[in-house]
Image (tube, rainbow, N blue to C red; front, top):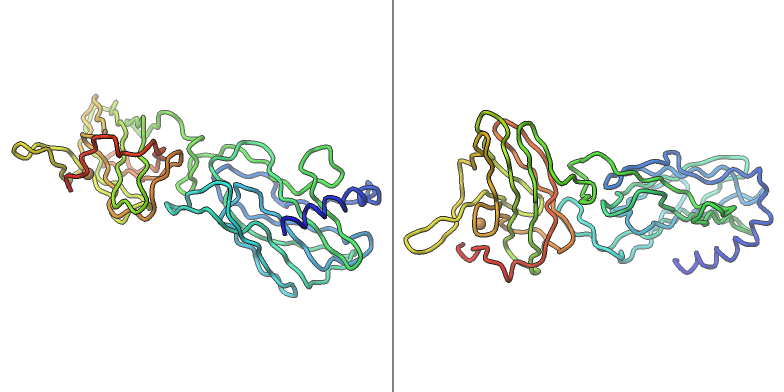
Length: 317
Ligand SMILES: [Cu+2]
């Protein structure tokens, strides 16, 4: 199916000559979206191929638009072409490395005089850059096709596009690029968040960050949750006789007024128990921190290299 777009591309060069400037383009109803956010695409098909009715609409999914679900359409047969992505994405803590690459609605009948819409949804990866992202689309008719596949501004047959901008932080987004270096929550400032990549099937992982409290009252990190693990706890390292062991802080971790607490390997840390997916270097995991006074915030912990060479003390479990 990917190959058929190449064929469509060749066909397009001949179609450009036929396509008069009065043609309305095939476009999305909403052409702006946030990086790292879900997006509902409504593809508008305003006419046939010349005067012919459209019987098939195909849309190619660009890299970086994942967890795609098309909407079925009465009178049309819905098919998808799935395949591996070039990159791996984190969807609510679960790694996604393959999915829908092309959507095909076929066997329909959309006369040139009519207008219709084709709907699908998905998520723009947090790693995408601001700017236009293109969804090449082809309308097929009995004797021809309209190939909306030009992915630059100069083309006569522009592919439907969405202009991406860096969005506000959102609990459902997994964008590391957009997260500021320091995150403020009330009197608290959270900085230097990170996690470490884990081996496949590793049972546990660690989370690290620094929390400063500029307020005049102590606050307390009460709990941490993450979709990456079945259970997420706050731990400390402590001497048990002559042995350094880690221990769960069931009452949470106090962030003293005017002071700061560092969560780091070998010290206080967030512990992910029962990982639902390995933590992958270069990606980020979402964690939600709940503080007694400052409230709740979801942040990203970018994953550094493996913990194999670091003293994490996780063997204490
Ligand atoms: Cu631990």
